[in-house]
Length: 227
Image (cartoon, rainbow, N blue to C red; front, side, top):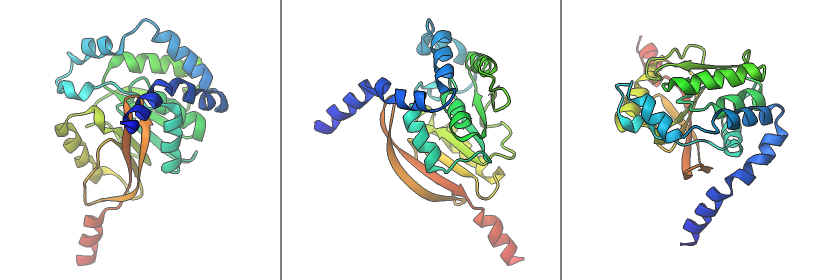
């Protein structure tokens, strides 16, 4: 019972936890103010309902939830993201993690999101904060988007159906050795994904396990040995 009460309290006080990160990271406060203004009169649930009807994907692929900035920083540190990385958020929503990666770590960051309005508004925020050279938001399907050159992948797997999670794992074969994959809420089981670390962190909906993997193509290495 005490653990449940603590989790509820932590969720209710998320706003207070965000301010140290917002104030400490240069430029993040501008992003947050614009995000608040653009979404002031928009309801996430209504936004999702109106736009997902245009997609053939199951309704389970459009669950709403966001990663708080202070948790996002832990994820980026966990994956040892640097300015030399190419970060991609598959299912980026309003784009908080994309902006955070660019501003906190100085890397190139891309958000892939199937809901058009989120990409339009996120790109508008990027333009207004002069971040268009660091971040980009694409209205695309993360099961088919280009992953060439990506070094760090973020997936909030709690937002998707089991079928979508299985299909996404098929894309591991396209990735280069050494790519780091952060998976929120669901373990990723693939022979070419090496588990590096597991942690439990706070999100807008509660505490979730987070898995960090690196890609290592054992199947290709075995084939080379046989040859």
